[in-house]
Image (cartoon, rainbow, N blue to C red; front, side, top):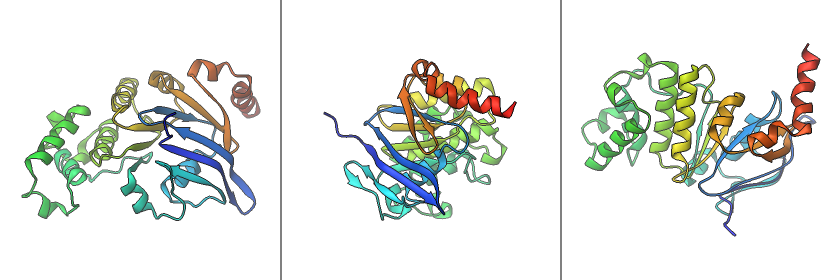
Length: 250
């Protein structure tokens, strides 16, 4: 049996008595694409914060490649091979697309004025490859601040991939995107699977369906159920969680 790349065991997080996560169990296999959905307040952001070390759980353990991540600082967890993309794009808007990617792939890390004259042939090839993945070759010398919202999202994903993480945590990548951009983002994330394990959080059900992945549903801080999108949408527990909330809001 393949060892899980990531495993959360009985994770609980309490804020002054409020249980943001409650006995949460979840595992990801190497090369897997997993979607995580859930209503507002289900614990999705807290879940990512625990994995990346931003937040320490009240109870439970997080294992990455079989080793506990507890008590490790965020920068150390990132170096172990976990990359996170936040909801809003975090790119250097005054630098070009190419320059943003150069900062991502350079090793060791160094500031742009020192980096610009010292990129190796391997690094330049890597940058060209990343621009190809996200279809930004024609915008290589365009400053990131002039890109569309969707293009900024893709650039940040490329920057994340450029750091060669084993696990990519992608938080709401299609918020504010057009239908066409949403479809392209789904294709982009699917293309990364195999070389990377990808976990995606989003509210857009059609986007999640387009990913064609296993889906985990969070509710009140724990995993309510898991399965394909068809299985999830026909599960009475999921219907109750979503339709019940809609009726309350009506």
